[in-house]
Length: 116
Length: 112
Image 1 (tube, one colour):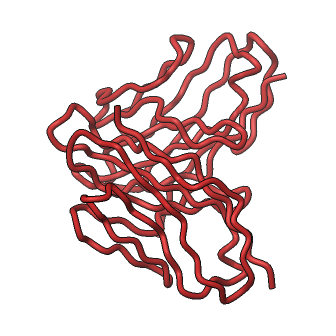
Image 2 (cartoon, helix red, strand yellow):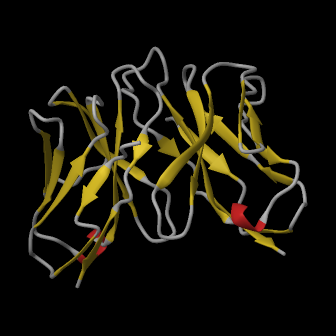
């Protein structure tokens, strides 16, 4: 079945360090890929998305490129801030050609802690 | 901008009781999704509705039911509550054909 695998956390970085959170997926079709962020005690916020191979999603300094050949969608940021501390979820949806109807399938989440 | 509204935000129930969670989607959004997030877990899809009809079903127990009303709000009804039902329940909404789902703040259900 369709699934998403993320690197395990927590990831602890100093402010201004470079961030990579790995995400790989398994899907039978051509899914759309997302990164969601969850701050403590809050709901999920869409961070960025990519809908087809080689698309690059970007927002607030975060980037991720849809790599079909490696079935990956790694999240990167060049210089993290303390305010980036949160849980990050990689997700897929809308596997075209299947019966999926837009539901999101999430990875297990990666906790990021940024220290001053 | 208007966001997804969920009520209540917190709910405490005892085993075997019932609970009703409500979700009010963003205006002009006609699709609603329900997700369950256990402690330290990723959100799991429960059920979705499009134009008041069930469009997909995930790992939702038979004790749970849901519907979408004519004003597009949705309710998740949970009966015979068990300790394992304690979780955050998120509602998300989207427009038809829209791939972006916008999440509400969640309802934290605690079953004692």
